[in-house]
Length: 110
Image: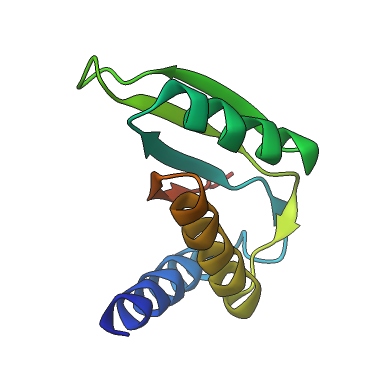
């Protein structure tokens, strides 16, 4: 339960920064990062994310030859705290189902 609270705090801090910089009312693509130890699970995860129209790349992790990076970005979405919190929780569940780790998200501030 504590992890969810940490995630909620992080989402809130990021959104306050975005709003302070004046870009919070724009739809933004959200970048995401997963790590998987198995190439098959990495591709299953990548294929699912592509099926919901996300841009996805599966590659060998730069830090380990036994880990695969699944990264990419969403379609543009409104950056609202509740929506991002729900999306983050969905990404966590998806990672668990694909034997991967959701390493987080980010967005460019225009």
